[in-house]
Image 1 (cartoon, rainbow, N blue to C red):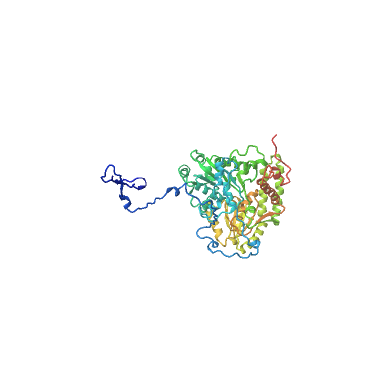
Image 2 (cartoon, rainbow, N blue to C red):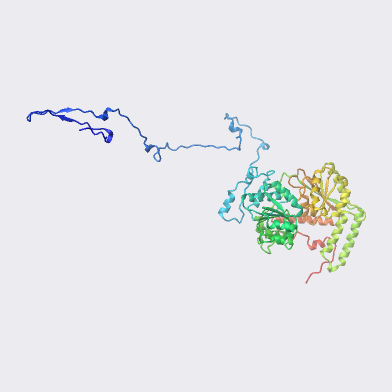
Length: 592
């Protein structure tokens, strides 16, 4: 039998033994002979084969080495170079040194400023969205948005206040940069895609200032102004898709039909110098209220000029219905506190140069005193003769006449105030400084310009054409021979940045302390490096001295109202206060 070479389990073939028998007799015993045959498989050399066992090399049958605790330490630095301490090899510990002196210690790190949800934000996902926003200071450090210089800490807080709010009143004191805060807030909202259109409304003299600030703080944000005739403005209203539009109150009032068109909608409307709409019955206020908008922001350093109703009328635009009708003044802050942010220079800029107030009482010249006494005596007699037909307007006419005599004698032109002003300006010019002089009227400024000729006076008032005003300001800033700028309160008290001046003279007093503060803060504002000296002229034993006392009380009332203290009914002069300026026995006839 041939061997089976097909192979079996284990690869080994059995040995095959075949016995051999010779022919023997049947009875003969047989002894088998064995024949040994070779197995072909065993003649070849054996080869061992090795295969990898997957059982021990793949999960989940991999053996672990047990729990290993790995300590990881990290240190971060700004690109491109790590701190030198990391690059240098480790050194042996040095002996302890004396503690540093107090003035050598590094200032504590300021807390991060983030936008925060408003009191009306109730959904968890909305509140969480604000918590996940990066700090604002990291946005303006040049990594994400380029700015001419990093905003101050309080300005970042103002931006964090404006951005999440649909209704907001930024009431910072004049000179703290409300314009920059509003522009940066709009810029971030545009970048985040939260808004697509915005309208800025400002007084006509400030359009140039806003244009300059927009180019400075938001160079990547296109904007256009409402210029030209009716057809061109209509195109700007209805056709233009420019994201940011700038218009003055006068043009807005003129285009009231286009402004109220349902096709015109803005995601944000910002009012600068929002006290322009404090009179709810004015046409300006009605046009502003008719604007279709998503967010309503107002900027003003004087939210209350005469009466708490000024604030109520502002909120008629900011958030209609927020303040219920007939709300007592002392309860107004309960409804408005979440929508108002106000800071003053003494709080947010402790390192800002001081503002020095000097009330200078001057004695009238003999000619002025004679004219003043004659005008007052005759005026009081005339008012008493009017009987019950007398009105507040009659009293105001006498007040204005007496104040003008306090400035200049009507016959000789003598002026005790001018004599003192000449003395002060000589010192200003000798020191190479500049000064602002404010008056209620244009006529005194014209007279002062002639008397102060050697100091290079420039005039800035309502009679100066609009296109000539900016060159006047540029010349006043750059011309070293021009030491004084003569301004009226109405033209020069808002929106101008004149922080390169160090002296302010109030040649005569305004009725409202808020307007006076606006005038003063043209010089005492961000960027001022030197103390600002404010001189308020007051003629002794005159109507000016009596009014000055009332103004101080009004200024205190203004501060108390914004501080949410007890509120008086009015900030203006009451009828009794006006008649109390003189010895007037007559009073207006009252309706039964």
